[in-house]
Image (cartoon, rainbow, N blue to C red; front, side):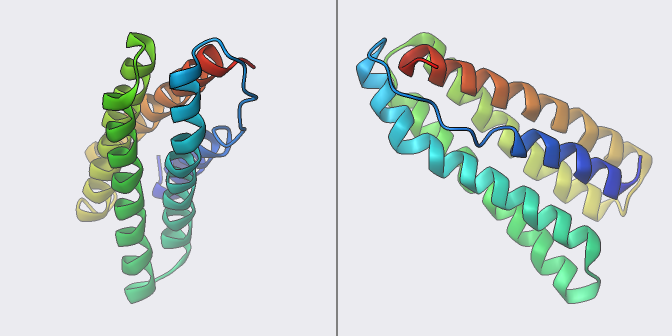
Length: 151
């Protein structure tokens, strides 16, 4: 798999994650936290994907800057998810936010490894694996939001 193909896979994961949930009082505390924080988390994840895509199109210094930005945005989204996880009351919400945090950091590390590995098959395989994990974590996160806030 080429780096460009891996980026397309990642784009699909983040693009599907931006739909906001409509509030319902199933778990008001967690719902409020999700509403306050999920936008930042998902926006940073989308921005990271945008930078990854741009890095695959750029060359030289511009590509390096976009790649570095992607890694930073993935980690910022992960940090925000980690903070959210410790604030939530429901175990399912905590678990979903923690899994998203871990998946975002894994994606940052895999993308960094892909860059350093200069597209080696092993680094591309790792990137593909973490992209699938990130997709699953985003789905779980969205389900936790829906569980707390309704659909």
